[in-house]
Amino acid sequence: MAFKRMKPARPAASAPIESVIVKELRRAEGLKERGRLDDAFEIAESLHRKYPKHTEPLLFMLDAASESGDAIAFEDALDRLLEIAPDVPEYVLTQAKITAANDYAALALKRFKRFLERWPAHKEAPKVREIVPLIEADLAEMLDKAGLRHADRFELAAVNDTLQSLIEKERYEDAIKLARQALEREPTYLPILNNMAMLLLLQAKWQEAPPYSERVLEFDPENVYALANLARANEMLGYKAEAALYAKRMKAGKAPPLGDKTGKIMETLSYLGDDAGALEAYRQAQVNKEDPAFEEPMTHHLAGVAAMRLGQEDDARSYWKEALRLDPDFGLTKDNLANLKQPIGERDTAWAYTLNYWAPLELLQSLVMQIPMDAESSIHGLTEEASRTILASHPWAEALVPILFERGDTGGRQFAFLLTNMLKTPAMLTAAHDFALSQYGPDAMRIDAANLERQA
Image (cartoon, rainbow, N blue to C red; front, side, top):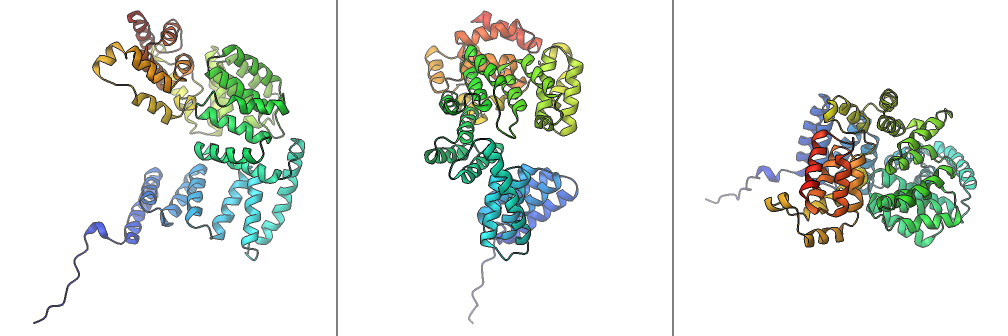
């Protein structure tokens, strides 16, 4: 008797991809319905990483981000969706509309025009045709006021909008690559030069940033953004006198049309530790009720930090209250207010920025990975040769330590203490001495800093 060949049973792990995705998304939908949006989003994101060519997880992520109001997560999911489904007109149009809503006029114009070129008969095309000339006219006026009359200025402005979008999404390497390409083609476009300097600062490449800002000043000596970038770069390199001079010029400088001068000044002075200057800029801007800086929670947060560090607690609480009115989940402000609930001896001094604002976490982690965490090192620190090796590859660390002791959050001060304990350079030990005598951190940490210096 002949037997038919039977198909082998399929193990559970080899179930069709589609059924796995459907099953997991049903589970995510259940979590979403119970209000667990973060958990639901995480399931969909995990599915996307596992099956990057499938659109279903990304569509779920769009829905979850929309429901939670997370605009950045929504844009990120949409960007990824367009990478695998670039020929769906609704996705392309949605991206253009979001770009316009985010005030990236040049990039929105480019995307609307691309939509019309590809789908001229789409039902939304008539509305888009009405929008395009309006955006074009407003953009031309803005570029004229800024003195940006390059032959391909609309395209350059779109590149600059893309850079700013990438910076907001913390895709720094992609942004640097795009900026370099644009500057090879047009080396005198000031907004891209400024953004290139800012990108290098965000990557802790403080020595590489100044040449781009100096090039801007050759064409526009009062450019606020270039002066701000130079002030911050010099501060992080330890050149405090030079940083102060650039900051002084920055306060008297000019911002381009629609530029947020107040926000940029407060941001820079907060990095420099000029609390009185930051608070003065805030209070001067209060006279102008339409200052765009006041629409951002960060502006009020920085004012609160400056006021708190100057001993004006009631004002600080008032400014922080305004920051949370604009964004109830603004973490920097919430953490500072939580810190105030601690007993006085256990509080940190108010901080403008957390550790990741001072240097990318990847860079900080690469430094820590070079430090051997054995018992001997923890007690006595590294050998002089080992310290030199680490500082050779991370020269910024020595200048960062005193800044973190003075202006860092809890994690920043702990990181500064770790580096000082391990590397024990004269500059770091001086910073630990100054911190021990200050009022900048909890009593216990300042006592530990004093002991560390005494042992060294």
